[in-house]
Image (tube, rainbow, N blue to C red; front, side, top):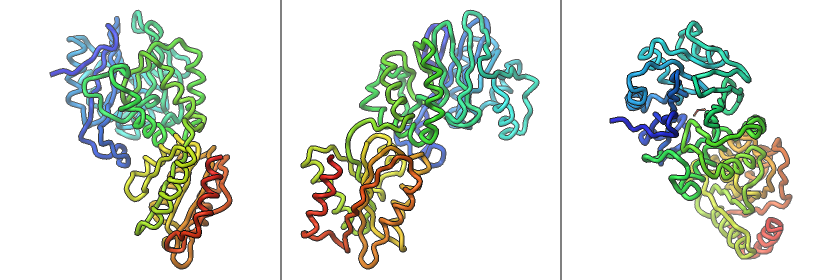
Length: 396
Ligand code: FEO
């Protein structure tokens, strides 16, 4: 049975939910699933916007056939070659042998890399500003390199003012029959996952995202159709405001996120003692145990809050392994523009602080609070004043 949704009379959602993949990209846990979006435009010509991951290929082909209603498929636009959107491209081309591929040169090269097939004979090659008429609908293409791969492009459909944005504005999370952001409680149920998606998948490329946002600002956009998660047709300002902040590495809110790595609980106690003192000073806190939470949660929290504290046990002459992982991952995602404090614990030669400081050395515009609270095995009552001083400094 088909599971299509109408975005409008002429634009049909033919993608679907995936609740069985445990790790997106083999890395990111997706306990609430994910969607792979694909849209069909019905006009004098029929045009499919992207294909889908292997996990939902059969249902998607059924949806597409139903939505076409016996018509041929004239075009498939490939905005992005990552296999979560292109895995099923060859299945599509076999099933619809007269469909032409509308894409840019870099995508064509990647099709050869992934599938060892040269499809250039059936390709319509587009570049920045190229357009394609489907009848009443007209697509204009804009290149969006590194949002999230170098070949990525987006398209704007003029008649209905719809922007097809590839990975941008996507989120983790299956939709369970909904398709519009205004059909769900986005801020309650999806915003955290949209942030985790952005920070971890696209977060490294803030400069490129800003460039795309600047191009989009010149367009009259009524709806945003991303490749994951809901379509935006109302309150676009909500997600645009988040993207503007995330792309600029501006914190969304004031608060201290304390990330700790603790072996027997003494470093956890340091983190909690500081959290209590911050709350007493009216500062919002979030505490994350790096041993329990996935590193993608830490990266997302770093995009959210303006201050971070890293509290780590010493380990193998360095920092606790999960803390080192977390900081390396933060640096890989262009961590910047934050105030940071470090706390460490060590029973004979505390080494965590120096290791974490070294990892953070290249971070842009990170203000490291000079004083490091150090515990020898466990924090002592007489160290309370050190903790108070750090809490005062962080609360400024
Ligand atoms: Fe959803 Fe970069 O692929």
